[in-house]
Image (tube, rainbow, N blue to C red; front, top):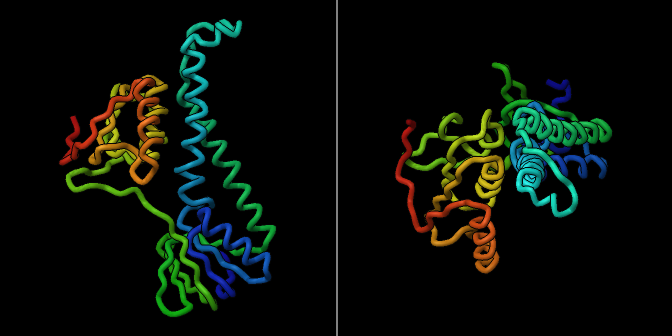
Length: 247
């Protein structure tokens, strides 16, 4: 852990909210400590969310385009493409590494102190950080909480990141599943469903509500569902998941 124990501002969380706030505060002249439980900066978005999912969406789209034969109309003739999933995952990881490394560089440039570990606010202006069995006390005039989110589970559904995976596990499957059932038709699940469908999985989406993309415009959701159905995704709407059982 870093030697600095007091600052004008402690930021808990180094995701898109936390790291941007930390950098801006430092640019405005504040001394800043940023506490993050991961070894890399960027939070869920850069490490196991938006960025890796977009990398896989891009790669899977190119694979599907090559496999579909549509390029022949443009005068490009290809043989049957071969999927190298390990290489695709390695490319995703390299994209993530580049972006998280860029934030690390900005932290050093702006003299922001990084502390790795789990943070607990133990008193006004005081944060205790635990990592590798040790504790460290930090103090500051102000504390900013930017802890982000974690995947949510359901009663009767135990996430083991093997047979039943969260969005994090879905970004790192070792092989293309024969069939993938998505619980929930939000944009995160639909992104993952699109990726694995393009790579050869049979994908079925189970959604409790009578529509996909809850919270988004209903007309957009209807049109998007039509697009996904043309891609081969199957939908069970107005359907509740009560439990899961591994085969």
